[in-house]
Image (cartoon, rainbow, N blue to C red):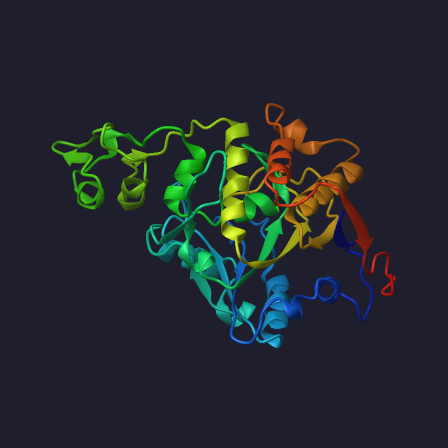
Length: 359
C-alpha cells in the first residue's frame, strides 16, 4: 500500500500555503532526491496563453529552492504541443511560460523546452509496453537524473481526468510521441492551407512527401513520425485524432513508464481550480469542484486515485464522469497498475490540516 500525503488549504499566521507545501516536501524527503550536481527536471504544464487554471509559480519556487538546498540543479520543463497553439514550438512556448509567470527570476530556475525548437529533440526508450514499443521522450526529460512532477489535477475531455500520469506520459512526449498516442493513422494534408513552402518535403525522413501545387503524402512510405506536422507553420499537415479514449489512456501510461525509467521521482498534485477540461485550452471553464488541497506521493497511481477520491468526496458525485460521460477514467489507473507503475491502494496521511501544524 502506498502513502499519499495531503494538506488542505486552511492557513493561519506563520503557516501559509507555501509553508504547507514545504511540510509535504519534508515528508517526501525531497532533499534526498538529488545528489550534488544532479539535473532535476520539474515537469509542469505552463498553461496555454489565456488559461488561468495552471499552478501558481510561487509554489514552484518552493520546490526549486528545496532541490537546490540538496545540491540538485533544477529546471522547469514541458514538451511542445502537437496542436497549433501558444506552445507549439520552443519560442512561443518560452514566451507563454514567461507571460504566465514562470520567468527564471521568479521561479529560481531556467525553463528548458524538453523536445527542442520544433518538438523533434527526442530520445527513444523501450517501456516494454503492450501498445508502445519505442516511446519518443523529450531529451531534456530523458537525460535528467531525477524528476519532480507538478500537476494541476483537473478533468480532461479525452481521458476523463488529467493527473500525474497524464502530465508525465503525454507531457514528456515529443511531438512525434504525442502523435503516436493520439492517432492510429498518418497525418492528413489540408490542401487549402498549403503554401508549397516545401519544409515538409525537405525534412521528411522517408521521402514520403512531394510538393507540387500542394503537399501530398505517399502513405506507403509514411512512418507516422510527425516530422511534417512539426515543420509546417501553416496548419496544412494535421493530426487525425482517431485513437479511442481507452487506447489513448493505455498509451499515455506506457509513455509515463518510459519517461520514469531509471529515475528517482516525486509527484505533487494541486487540487485547486479543478476545471472540467485540460489546461491546453486557451481559456478555463468554471471549476467543477471546490479547492481541496495539495497531495503528494512517490507513487503516481496512488496519487491520482487519491486525488480522484478527494474530489468525489468533496462534490458528492463524480464531476468528471458528469462532464465527460463517454470516457472511462479508470482505464488510466487500471493499466498503470497492470504494468507496474504503482498501486491504487493507498493510505492518506494528513499533514498540517485544519490549522494543526503538528498533524
